[in-house]
Length: 263
Image (cartoon, rainbow, N blue to C red):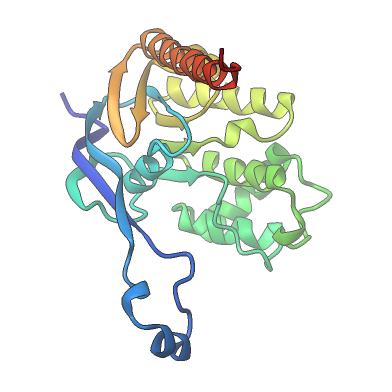
């Protein structure tokens, strides 16, 4: 089978530095060079392997710091892995996350042009679908204001609107469906359904397990940078919730023991 995404033994390492590291040459000379070195390293991803067939919607779940966003960024080509490899056979229409790469001093109109071209559209194509992008994002009254005046939700709406007009073969979505009002979230999810029917491959990172169960064909659970399970959404979500509940009950039990008065 020809896969849209193949991830094999993927690992990504980051370094942690001292909080009081020197920032100037003078501070370095006075305090020494030792604090310029990283104090430790950690693996955001470790030996992660999975494959995704074309046209599948895959949910990625896990607690904060489990490596979900790192995985999507590496698939999108943002950064390099320290081990393993990623093979992507479809054109990525966009990496949509809470750090959407708009220029803050450009207006919404100017950012549509820039990001549309980056996404693979020509200037003429951007001009042709401009009104549709603005209407989908519901930003007609703000489109000539600088992006720095937009709320996070407004930026995410604009980023999603641009990406879906770029005829994507693949979409990578990181938590943006948790931003904005309920009606706009439903509109985005309906468009995701439409893309799925058209054969678009979609990876969604979300803490909303209900959303994952409803819209995804399969799901991946990452824990501390490792892949725990890749299976049907109901199977993965059930195991994830069971583990989370067990961890919470254990934490509560430990807390109760420590607060008990000595006999």
